[in-house]
Length: 157
Length: 157
DNA sequence: GATGGAGCCTGTAGTCGCTACAGGGTCAAG
DNA sequence: CTTGACCCTGTAGCGACTACAGGCTCCATC
Image 1 (tube, each protein chain N blue to C red):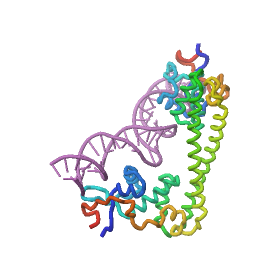
Image 2 (image 1 turned 90 degrees about the vertical axis):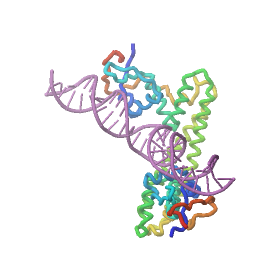
Image 3 (image 1 turned 45 degrees about the horizontal axis):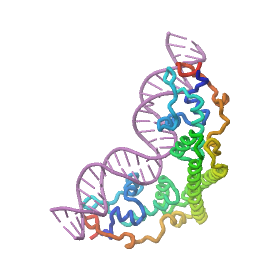
Image 4 (image 1 turned 90 degrees about the horizontal axis):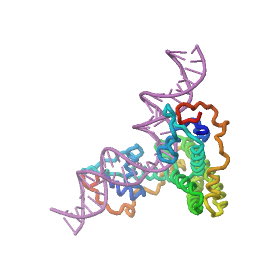
């Protein structure tokens, strides 16, 4: 009846996934629990391989496990219009673009920092300076608005 | 003696940090434990504010807490040459650039996926198709090399 | 002086997506 | 019969927080 079945290790090799990760996917309900052999080993069949491949591809594209779960659910209903799939992918793209913008800005700041470093001593290192800017000699009254700590002997009076 | 001291909430407002995060930094040894008031409230003083600002800036630039810890340690020794600081910053920049490259590639793939979507049904959705490619009808013998599962009744034969 | 509510305290558990054990059982080859 | 690769369950750890629960403190107001 069953054509071929394979062990978790074989499935792992076939999908470049760690064995522990496969068990983890099963635990969180992403991969259906397979049949077991007499020795209580997991015996996977074709659909498991396909499903795990799907998951790994989705993860490779940066979808969260929840997004992958949703995409899997959607992919099961072949008749449904794929607007929802499109929506998830677009939302993810937007996220990626947001991260890209953040990282690009970050790269700029880091480059500037490194460029300004004169390789002297810490005392006049621009990098340290940039992290601990000189502008804060006193805690600004504007920011710390409501004062009311003066109890005990630790606080000034 | 002490000029001014402020509560954890005030420090939080002054640095745009959550109260819990400040306590967390103290727990992991990034922020030294402040004096306490009679009522056992944390009473922060100026250096705490400076140190926390430093931490937040470092985090804002994407440095890990360990990197921030190292930068803090270095920044305390004003005489030391700043080569080490430079090294950390450069290593971090390299990481950022690596992530940028990954994300850029990702964005490309996502865009292509979305572009190809014809808004039909799931059955011919390119996005789903791309995730579950048709190329895997049989588990390839090349990948799954060592077969030896046939015990029990779950495995074939 | 009683009360209300904002703020503080400690300690623990949850998040995400794995990863790494510990302590055992199973299987096939030599 | 032993070896060693593989498998099993269950639990704890990572990073960097975040979110409670259950209680205490402080201050203003009545």
